[in-house]
Length: 430
Image 1 (cartoon, one colour):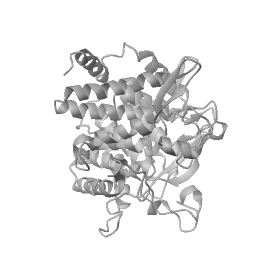
Image 2: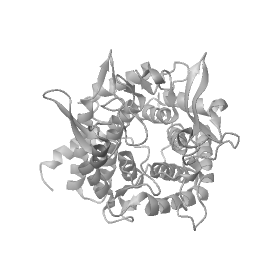
Image 3: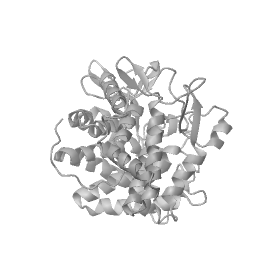
Image 4: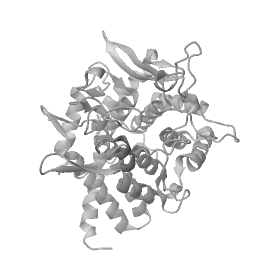
């Protein structure tokens, strides 16, 4: 091991354990926390997803709310996480088809549905938020909530062994038969239904939630469901030729978040059963094909990841951009890889991966936008730009709740998808 790595490794592990908050990132963390508290619904605590984009005034996307609840746990404010998770537990008007709808806003203090589709991904993340809240507080209501979400996902798992998607969790439940547009992509009846579609990211979410619940309850249905999801991920989710993850079944598109989530959720040991040293290969792919450097001004630049790979960016004819959210996800994935290598005694490699995480955090600090005494992040560094995944980035001037929330997760090294042993059921002071 190189001697020069020893002090860096010590510093980085102190940082990861939360012992360095008086240092470089303390002001960034404080500003991000203040931003979340300013930009939310006062009554419920739900975050405003895209602040500054007039098309989404007051909107909360369920995925953003779930990640924000997890961020509150990361910074030790369990009461704030409770407010968010309780909203979805206590308001049946935002539920349909056995799940929670995609987006809401408020009118006269009441929730109003903005996107009535029900998608597995957002629901599974809400289940992760409830599950981690249970681990933090020991309150049985949150375990019950997480189980309800997981049980709904199990109903969407393909059980026919002769089906190519055996073991996979569909992207959503069947729609209302009276509405031919319901539960189709973009509400277009000519496009596929969610129940017929299988995305890698959703199956990684399910793998993580089923694992959490199997550990907490010992229930066989979660253990079995998780094993079958893993089988789907090996057969359909993983691209064995390029040593990366596909976006979904029969969809080889590169989605950068899926690469990071794959390493976070599965880790080195499980991914070694996919291909030798697959975890490292996946993140190497991201570095070579999805990581970009963009100018901030005449002298300064920032480095992070795009939503897609370089070849797809060129095909779209747009400039490279950085997603703070997805870059923070990569930072967490580097931490997972670093931890896994350290556990096997490979300290030099672990040090190198920890340094990559730290470098990304420093790069993202350059993108923080001051607003009063708060700090936010744009959804992406280019407004109204093609993601490469069906949608556009929000309008110019927007700041993103999920980018801020994922920033807090990464700064604290809290990875909701990772292997976390059951926590002691003691309530942490708020």
